[in-house]
Length: 107
Image 1 (cartoon, helix red, strand yellow):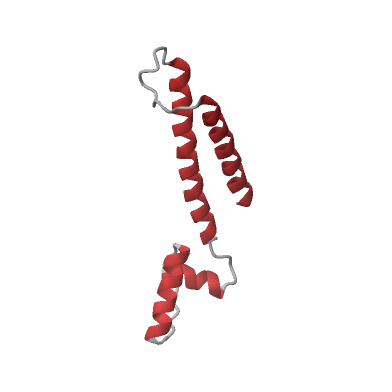
Image 2 (cartoon, rainbow, N blue to C red):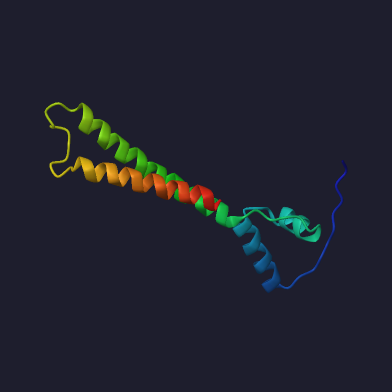
């Protein structure tokens, strides 16, 4: 496929706006303009933010799971924090799972 160039002139302010929009959409300026001119969809920038939030929630879930594993396998409780409450840990895990499921549904 042979590519052809299309030129357009814009003001400095307009160029800055196009550059900012391309950065926000995580696209090159050329790809952004091509999609806009052809009426194609732009990437959902909120989706990227949601994925980052889910990664953080998943890390919290892993941390809580590791604490639970330690609580169940540490016979002398030497590795556990002194103020660890198993019931509270279960509750935190359930709450974090619910939060993660909610974020997934929002996608």
